[in-house]
Every structure is written in structure tokens, then in C-alpha cells.
Length: 312
Ligand code: NAP
Image 1 (tube, protein in one colour):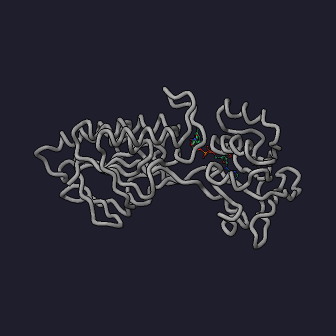
Image 2: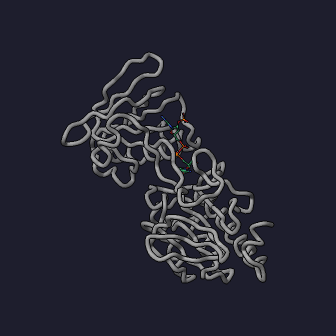
Image 3: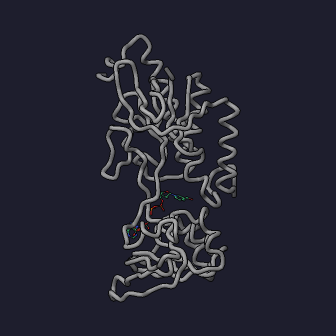
């Protein structure tokens, strides 16, 4: 029986584990693939205090070293379901079930797909959702980038240093990305902006992508762009299907200010929850509160059954 199971080994998960372990809780981090979460595939992070400019992988290595220094236990397994019962909470995983008094969900989110013709057919053969991972395949070649949020703009700036030319496609005439990123992308000379445009179809053959058909929303005119790569950054879907708590219509977990979900003893932090801002700094802030409240929850439980607490 653990005191605290942390689901996810990104910045939020590692922070929750550090706080839980320092509070004396028997803690384990369950991670399905590899530690790091989204920042492990981020180029540069410039808004995490204390690190004016650091690469995502370097920042993540620092988090990992910190986790090791508090002897955090890490198990690679995929949580399939969280079950509530009289004896606490049970994590059903690909391995044996794991029992715990509390859970902090830091399972993050994954890139959304857009749904245009050819998107899935050419996924991994010209269509990508990670510039930092795949950019090098398109060195000195033309590519398209789709989306107007922080991710799309950051990745376009990153790719502009590698590729020959970028067609940056957005459905509106302005980006929603933070101002400093907007200023930076506007100064890149090898990016052509295709505003108010929708994506129609990825063009290609057996060798992979050869082009992208876009449509001007106002004129209705289509245009075929000769590109070898198509990078899609149109938002994120939360990794929350394994938990049956209250969520919004997109599946993000609803918490209170203490990061408590609708299930007693289950807390959520970072990108997987409903929050106005998704950053490394907000993920670790959420996680610190969640672990603190998990510890408080266990203290309150002493001498009582979970069933009684669930009715409080
Ligand atoms: P996002 O902020 O939700 O932006 C998604 C973008 O995709 C928007 O520009 C949206 O257009 C566009 N889009 C969505 N559906 C579309 C559709 N069907 N067709 C065409 N375009 C579509 O997602 P994100 O950029 O992945 O960011 C996710 C979260 O992580 C955000 O909270 C973001 O701030 C955060 N983040 C922060 C950083 C950082 O360094 N500070 C880096 C990455 C991510 P509209 O603008 O027209 O809605």
C-alpha cells in the first residue's frame, strides 16, 4: 500500500513526488513511456524562473536528477483504470494492481490531430506533431506548419533555423501565442504566412508527402504548396481516460483550488486539468499543492475508513 501514487513523469509528476516524499509519504511515480512529458521534446524554455534559457531536455534532466536525489521510485507502466474501494484506491496497470491512499494525476496531454485528408495516412511519412523530434529530416527543405498557439509559433521558429522555407498556415489573421513569440516569428525571413486558410489535403505518393492543399477561407480559392513536411500543432487532448472523475467536455479534469478532483483522495495537476495556463511553472505549482493536500488528506484519514471520508 502506497501513501501516494503519482501518475506521469513530467515536470508536474516529478514535483508532486518530491513534495510527497519530503512529507514522508511512501510514493511511486507511474510513467507509461519515458520521463519528461512535453518538455522533453521542447526546443528552448525561456519562462521557467531561474533558467533564463534552457533546452527542454536539459531542464528535464535537472528534474530527473532532483527526483533521484530524493530516491523517488519510478515504475514504467500504463495506468488503465483507477478504482475506488473500501481499502483505498487501486491502480489497474499493465502489471500488477497497485494500492494507494492518494493519487496525484499529472498525466499531461497529447497533440490533437486536425482531421484533413491524408493526415493519418502520411503520419510519420511527412506529417508530424513534433518539430524538435522530426525537424532534422527536413533540413534545407520546404515544410508547412499549422496552428496559431504557443506550440505552433515556437515550433515554427525552431524549424525556421533548419528548413529552407516554412508556409505557416493559420485559420485566423492573428496568432494566439504569447507576444514575445509573435514578435520573434515575424522577424524570421524564411516564413511565409498563409492567414485565414484551412487545410484541405496532404498530397503525396509512396515516397511520402509532396505537398499540401490549403483553401483561403474568404475567397474559397485553393492553393497547392510544394512541401516535404507538414507539422500540425492545433492544440492538445488530455490523457485522462483512465479516471472516472468530473471532467469538462474536452476531457480535462475539473479540480478545486486544492487540486482535488471529484474522487476523494485523487488530485490532479498540470496540463491534464482545467486551467487557464499550461506551462512548466503552472504544472509544478499545481503539483506542489496537490502533494501537500494529499498529505493533509492522509492525516485527516487516520482512524477513519475511506467510505466515511467519501461521504463527508
Ligand atoms: P492552443 O493554445 O490550444 O492553440 C491551438 C491552435 O490551433 C490555435 O491557434 C487554434 O486556432 C488552432 N486550431 C485549433 N483547432 C483548429 C482547427 N480545427 N483548424 C485550424 N486550426 C485550429 O494549443 P497549444 O499551442 O498546443 O498550447 C497548449 C497549451 O500549452 C496552451 O495553454 C499553451 O499556452 C501551452 N504552451 C505553452 C508554451 C510556452 O512556451 N509558454 C509552449 C507550448 C504550449 P485559433 O487560435 O483560431 O483558436
